Structures are given as structure tokens and as C-alpha cells.
Amino acid sequence: MDLMQMDKTYVANTYARFPVELVSGKGSKVYDNNGKEYIDMGSGIAVTSFGIADDAWRQAVIDQTGKLQHMSNLYYTAPCAELAKLLCEKTGMRKVFFGNSGAEANECAIKVARKYAAEHKGNDCFTVVTLKNSFHGRTLTTLAATGQEHYHELFQPLTPGFAHVTAGDMDELKALCASVKVAAVMVECVQGEGGVIPLSADYAKDLNAFVKENDLLLIVDEVQTGNGRSGQLYAYMALGLEPDIVSTAKGLAGGLPLGACLLGEKVENVLGFGDHGSTFGGNPVCCAAALSILSRIDDALLASVREKSAFLFDAFTGAAGIESVSGLGLMIGLKTVRPAGDVVRECMARGVLCLTAKDKVRLLPALNIPMEDLAKAVEIIKSVCAG
Ligand SMILES: *Cc1c(COP(=O)(O)O)cnc(C)c1O
Image 1 (cartoon, rainbow, N blue to C red):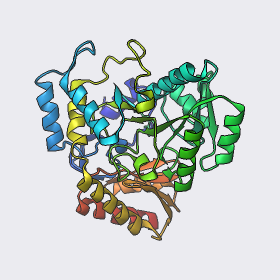
Image 2 (cartoon, protein in one colour; image 1 turned 60 degrees about the horizontal axis):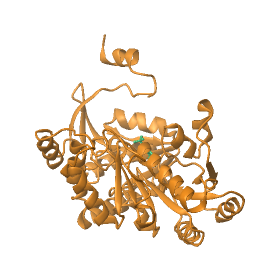
Image 3 (spheres, protein in one colour; image 1 turned 90 degrees about the horizontal axis):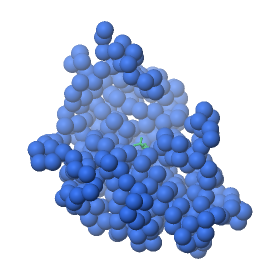
Image 4 (cartoon, protein in one colour; image 1 turned 135 degrees about the vertical axis):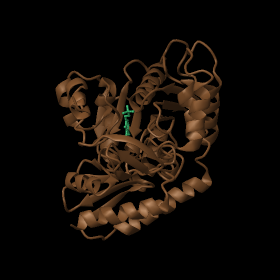
């Protein structure tokens, strides 16, 4: 049985995979089982922040696996504490809960918001408002948070206590808050799965003021936008949002599973012993990997992310077959004349791995992608879009 047949037979049918087997890589290059080379413009959906098999990241992982690959959260381990300290120092947040994924980071954020609201505003205050077209994860609760009906249909009943409002429409949010007791508002700074759509700066400013005036918690989902992807350490920093809770995951550990829920001053002590937990959360290997990544996301790297972003906006804006360019940092959406799926398939045939998001072509290259690889990928993408 060949590999694709084996996978189709034994792996649950949840992914429409491309007919290609990837076996290795280095930096922003990946290779399939025939030795064909691809430029990676997807980073495993914003995960491999410093590319494939990055040397410093690998050394950190190898060193930690030689010491302690896992220990129960009943004991102290250094990588977990050091990573939490670094995250707090870099953001001004106060405490961190570690899980294994974006959905889990959001589950924690929602639990914290529920408990805070129950304690400060009463048991009938629990609604978390999110935006239409958002994406917050695949668990039943984060699906309920996700503002896209088509994800909900087959899985009723979902966790109650969520409402969805239109991004950019403050009046709709105000009307909702006047009729329902709201605990928190949760937003993505750039809707990733929703089509790489940034929140407008005006809306972010009004939202920030509104949640403050009304003593609502602000949760920012930085699962995709976080950890340097936006050209800031976290995208909320560019928008001037002042979140009480920040969830992140994807790029945090550069390719190992790690989610983090960052808790600000207001909510730092909401969780007590036994309120939440995760067997693998704060795993020493994942945290050592994240320390290697996070400690290198400095001002120089962020400046280079913004430069590469400007290069991409410049290259694609007005190009043949490209109707519009959206996004922030190295999170780019292209509205193409040709169907996005066709563009991605042809780019792959020509040696460039791209993603889609709704009807857009989505690009999420490694933060340190060499300019040479980036320029070459751009030429191929432009030529496919024009064709
Ligand atoms: C990917 C994503 C999630 C879900 O993360 P998982 O690690 O797949 O659970 C949640 N929110 C946003 C914004 C995402 O992009």
C-alpha cells in the first residue's frame, strides 16, 4: 500500500490533502518524496516561525529532550517558568496558563472570563461576544465562539453563551450589550481563517474605549497573528488595544504544540487551584522551543517582518490577476481573479506552497524567510495569478 492510500485508509477523513508527500526541509525550503523543492509560503499555517529545522530551535529542543521531556505539573520545571516570565516581561501581562493548542488557549480565556464575570457581576453574566466571520477553534466551545454558521451546523447543541456582531459596527455591539449581560468581547486583530481581514484602526479604538467604559473584559485571539507574525510581537500592540486576556499558539513554539493564555492585571488571580489544568500544558520541550523563538523576536526581526510585508504589498498591489491585497505583517491575503484553489495548485506545481483562506490566497511565510526565496516565490505567484 502506498503512503497516500495508507493515510486515506487509516487517518480520519478530516483533511482534503494535496497529493504530495513532504519529507524534509531547511529554512523556507521543503522537499517532497521525489526530491522536488518548494518555497514554503505557508509555514504549516503560521507555525514554523523561523522555518524548517532552524538550527537554534533544534538545539534547544535536542538539549531539553536530553534532560527531561515531560514532567507532571505537580512539580516545578524551568522552561515553563522562564517562558511565562519572558511572555509577561514582553507584554506587561501578569500570568500565563499553558495548553497545547489555539483552541485550548481560547477555552482558558473563556473560562477565565466566565469566572471573573460570575464573581464580579453575578451568575447571569456570562455572554462572550465575538465577531461575525471569526475563527476561534474546533472544540465545541470555541466553535460556539466562532462566528461562522457553517462550522456550527452539524454539531448542535454547542456551548451556550455566545453572540456574534459585525466587525466595524459599534452600534450593533452597543445594542447587544444593552439587551444581554455581557462578560467579555473577543476579537482577532486580523481574521485569518475568515479571509485575512484586518480590524480597522477606528473600530479598534472605539472598541477599546467601549469595553473600558462598560467594564467588559477584552480578549484578543492572537493564535495566528501573534509571536511576530503581524510585524509587532502581538498584533494588538499595533492597534492600540489593551486586552485583559491574550490567547496565542501557532507560531509560539516554532513547530511544537504549545498554546498560551496570557492574563492581565484584572484577571491574573481569577484561576485558583483545580480551576483549570492540562497534562501536557507547559511541557518542558515545547517551552524550551518557545524560549528559543520568543527570545529572537526582537526589534530588528520585527522591523524586517514589516519590511518584507511592505515588499509583498508593493509587489502584489495592482499586479495582473490580483484584485486586492489585505493583511498585516507576514500575514497576507490576495483576492485573485482566478479561483484561489487553482492558484494554490498551480503554484505548488511550480514549486511554491501557498494557502487559502475563504476565497483568498493566503501567504504566511517564515518570519526569517530569506529575501531571495521571498522574491522568487512572489514572481511565481504573480505569474500564476496573471495566467
Ligand atoms: C488556528 C486558530 C485557532 C485554533 O488553533 P488550534 O491550534 O488549531 O486549536 C484559534 N484561533 C485562531 C485565530 C486561529 O487562527
